[in-house]
Image 1: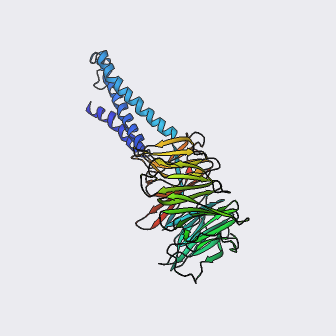
Image 2: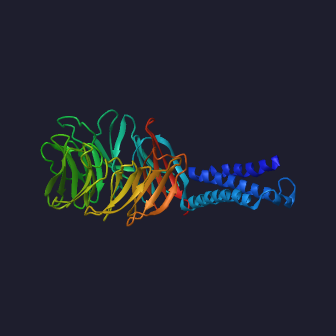
Image 3: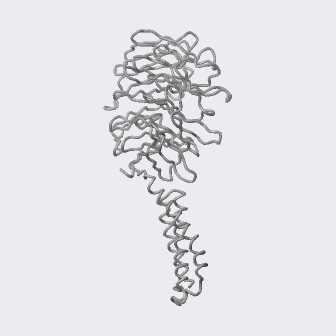
Length: 458
């Protein structure tokens, strides 16, 4: 009986452990519980019918009917619930299948997806790879002592902008790249005869109809293919563009920038119409720590206040007149990723009192359309078509990627990364219809890796 008992319990449990290694934390527990419960269930049945000690059906007399029922029912319930959870998890989670990875390299400053090409901007080079297979297509190195500081958030018409400088110097040059051919198109160098060196790095952004380059010396709009200056929007006296990212944008015939004026507690939004030459400015309010320019049409700015008692908010402006159309107060101190803007929605992360996060969809009138709670916080957000995609982490599991319905916030698809990936190490991601691209950073080593996954159900 001892040997049989050992085999009945140990073998299924051991097999469950091997199979469970392919599942998430909760599914592993469910599978092991199901295996052990099933083994015990079989053991009780065998004992009930006297098959463990060779007495055959005489074993029926050993266990009265009520005791048999009391022993079997709890085990059966655990077996059903555990197996049910395992089946539920398996059906509701697509597996992200590794497709290709780029070797570990210098830190990633930005990336673009252009057609079937993935372009990685590193601190030492700009390199392009096939989106489907990860094969190298072209590379442009920035040999020492040059070092890349930043890249434009997006590419436009096959062009991307890269800001760089000599090692140890403040970023003061911008180069435009033809992302199809992998060659530089032009370089903009801020004036060498400036009255004082740049205190912070210059930046650059692309949009329909222009490239905007900015530093504390001003804002200039250039032709994105030739680099010929198109317009230098006026900057009020005593003001200069903010140093941090997402502070300027061009598009829809206008250029917008966030300016720091007089002191660190005063930030204004400045907008100029490129054709008409008209401009306006609007204050973002006192005690502003920083701000992000999210969109030029609609004109949306995300503001963070200096003190926790002052509510962070999203401000929506009329791009023609500068009138404030709506103000969306954000719940709790803003700690999450930047808000996302589409043609008719704003998606923002809010911190709840219980330390969970909420993704909230707002209309341009400032009304809450829906909200979805993420118990263990939100790590990253991204627009997948017109709806949001969110990366978060379940306790004991790897990072989870979910896409939400833009109208209701309901979960459309939920996928799980392999357990070797933690959301804490992922700094950015991008979705295409058949690929999920993730940037994984090692802050201590100042290195990064790129991983591409396919969707298991596709």
